Amino acid sequence: MRLTRAGEYAIRCIMYLSFKGKGKLVSKKEIAAKCAIPTHFLSKIAQELQKAKILEIKQGPRGGFVLTKDPSELTLLEVIEAIIGEIYLNDCIARPEMCEASNICAVHKVWQKARRELRNILDSVTFDELVKDPKCIPNFDREI
Image (cartoon, rainbow, N blue to C red; front, side, top):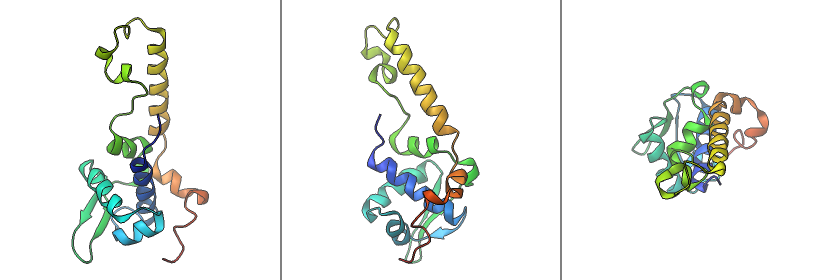
C-alpha cells in the first residue's frame, strides 16, 4: 500500500488544524500556504473530510475550515480512510470473490494479519500526539 497524495495532503491539513485547535476557523489560503497543498486540491480533500465529519467548511470571504473533532480523539486511520476508503493491502482481501484460492491460500492469511496490524498502528496514533512533536510541525509557526 502506498499513501496517495490526497491522503498525504489530508494528513497535513488535519495536522495544521489540530495545531490551531478544535473549533478554530482557519482560511483555506493559510492552510494551503503552511502545508504546501495546492488550493484546488485542498478544496477536494476538505469535501471528503467534511463528509467524514472531521472538519466543517465555512463558505464566504471570511470562510475556511474548522476542525470538528478533538485532536485527541482523531486518528491517522480515520483521516486516511476518509480520503482513500478502507485500507486493504491486496485485492484478495478487499474482494475475496476475485480470488479462487482466498479461503485456502497461506498468503491470504499474511495479508489479513498485515492489514490488521497496519490499521491498528494507524488507529493508535492521534493528531494530538502528533502536534506535540515539534519535528512534525516545522513550518506551522512561520509567517506566510
